[in-house]
Length: 200
Image 1 (cartoon, rainbow, N blue to C red):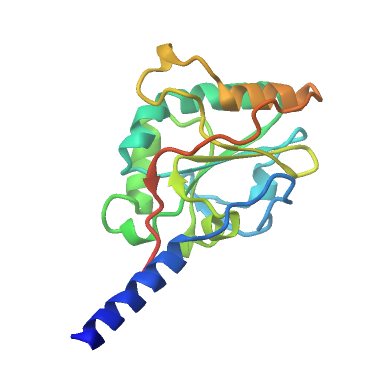
Image 2 (cartoon, rainbow, N blue to C red):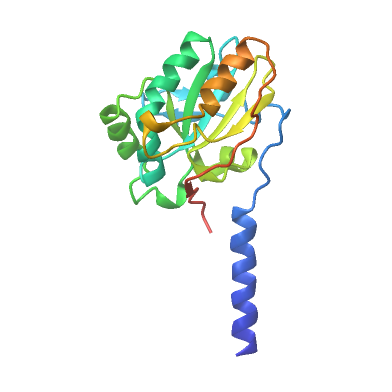
């Protein structure tokens, strides 16, 4: 019995270790900029190639999380804001453990077409990029400036359920303050969403 308890504790510890990646602190350099990932367009992209003159917005996302479904009506609007401000945007699906449960490339292609994604949506094999970022949830947002330094991380806004009820536009404000050369008034916010489904 003690042996089984000990084995259970080891399994729990390993599982926690897989999940417990430290999230990038503010000021960090963009990690894995040259790492190639397959996009729903059929191309291979890197974070550096997705970047624009004023920076890069990275959103860890997926097909299967209800929190993504709640927020994704704002994804295309955010992409337009990013484009207007010459900031690149890319969504990354790191749910390696769910590739056969709705988060494979074929499903990603259908999902992106249905949702009218106007930005790259790439597959992160073995959640390597998510691990490098310390991304924990879907959605989880990381905004980098023109020098590829992390200046905002957290949520999109303060109301996942109703876009019309949002009172704090965390990400939009961060993009506009960044491009204007202003201080980011709220540089970190709490992430809400499903855990990224890493391999155990």
